[in-house]
Image 1 (cartoon, rainbow, N blue to C red):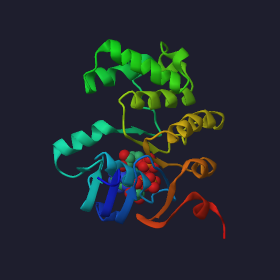
Image 2: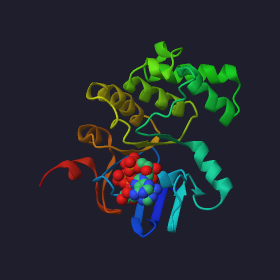
Image 3: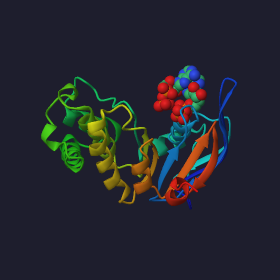
Image 4: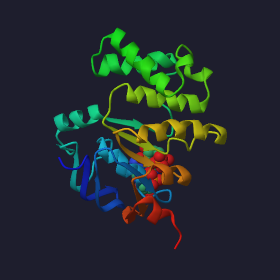
Length: 230
Ligand code: ADP
Ligand code: ADP
């Protein structure tokens, strides 16, 4: 596949609400795409299509050469390579930070516990929460929890990361610690799609920005074009 992700005339409905309108979009390997737009414009729906969390009505979607549609095996192949971080952290409250990162590796991709632990500790270090590895989620801050959620995802070696407003549930003083580790991630060769209202961050990391309104991509460009008022 030429592009990491390729949407072609994708349409999606919730009942009679037209949530995605003829969305056509390519994301290149290693590229960081930022999606902006008002609440309810379909940003979340768009990225949830990428790992098959939402089905679409018509059009085509290809991710890392796999067609995302009805074929369960293709979907499974895609999901193995796509990580996602949401607004809410979804950590297991009864598991330690470390165990939250180890379990998906052991259960999901059949790594040995020893290897999974090593990888988890490496990723927890990368997002600067290694010293909290043996705490439980309710013993750390929201910003730390979100970084743990990121480490958990990274532990599975994704090629693509999807971020759905990862800082919008955080207290203001914790936002930058999460954006900082995300920014570091965008410098690597991962393909990233990020929905965010943090415009300074978007401008700093985006290779490409799209603006969605009412289910359609109404503008597309590089961050200079998109964030400069004419
Ligand atoms: P955004 O992420 O831009 O806020 P969403 O993709 O979450 O937008 O939602 C787009 C539109 O689709 C909104 O009008 C929302 O209310 C609607 N919507 C989202 N999810 C559902 C659902 N599961 N059922 C019905 N309508 C939905
Ligand atoms: P986000 O902005 O992250 O999409 P929302 O608060 O819009 O979060 O949606 C949270 C959940 O509720 C999602 O699973 C979404 O699909 C669902 N949802 C959103 N809008 C509607 C709706 N109008 N009817 C039913 N479910 C909805």
